[in-house]
Image 1 (cartoon, rainbow, N blue to C red):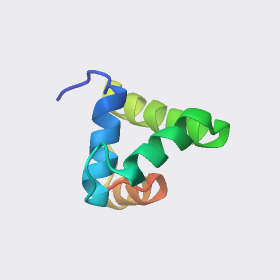
Image 2 (image 1 turned 30 degrees about the vertical axis):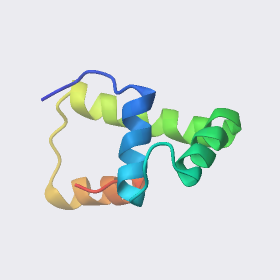
Image 3 (image 1 turned 180 degrees about the vertical axis):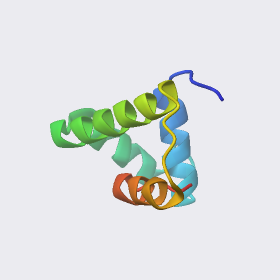
Image 4 (image 1 turned 135 degrees about the vertical axis):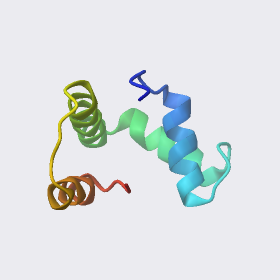
Length: 78
């Protein structure tokens, strides 16, 4: 399991890949600009990142239903 922290570029690539956009597309540039200036989104992404890091670090084992609910709550796919 890779527990290295993702870089901003990797996060943006992941977001844009899931949107079917190139990293330098107007949509991805707008998302990056928004994330750079929106305290609410920064807090949200920090909380998601923290949750994921704790989940990985402590190797939390939960049943499949709980795992699915956590991913759904965080807006992540398994």
